[in-house]
Amino acid sequence: MFPALYAILDFNSGLRENLSIAKSLAGAGVQLIQLRAKSAPSREFFGASRALNAELKPHGVRFIVNDRPDIAAMVDAGGVHVGQEDLPVEEARRICRDSRWVGVSTHNPEQFRNAMGTSADYIAVGPVFPTSTKENPDPVVGLDLLRAVRRLTKKPIVAIGGITIESAEAVYRAGADSLAVVRDLAGAANPGERAREYLAIAGRVRAEN
Image 1 (cartoon, rainbow, N blue to C red):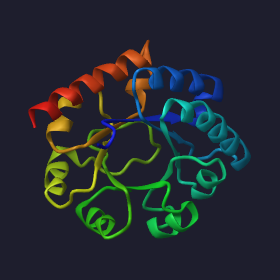
Image 2 (image 1 turned 135 degrees about the vertical axis):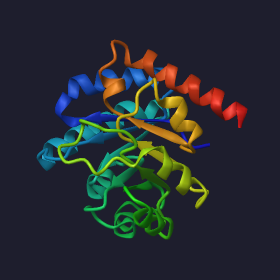
Image 3 (image 1 turned 180 degrees about the vertical axis):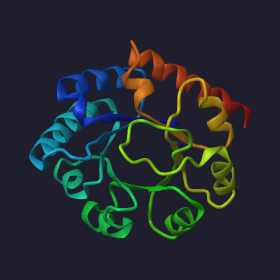
Image 4 (image 1 turned 90 degrees about the horizontal axis):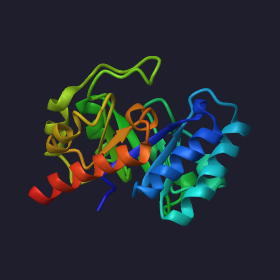
């Protein structure tokens, strides 16, 4: 079963802080963690990715590198996530090979349908709600798009954008297999405890379904 919580770490928070958050999340049972860096120097992004992957792999956590399949392959990460302006899914797959996941972001029905025809292991949809974690976010898609695309595929769908613990249940019920969360985890007093809250909600919704 696809992990119900997809934690995203911001490179700009610093490696020490991200390692601390990652340990807390892994201890809480989070199985999927991504490092996102939109403007980091390649050498520093590589170093941070290598350190986080080495920390998380023994805990059974799949570590995902954002945008950079070359770095994902070099550090032996669990996969790469690409956006609409990054390498196409199949090119990222060629670099990462089949042993690693390749995920892709979509922001409208056309992009989602295109992603369905690729080898992507999961498809992200968003931003579901307004978000401040991106400088130039795409238009908010709301829960309606999530409900609509859920009927189109059996591939795992990851909802992303402005999700908080208060909105989590509604997003799961709209059809998301997993919630990608940035600020509501990293900004929590105890990221691990907050992660457990998300996982409990997911468990309850999945049990009902």
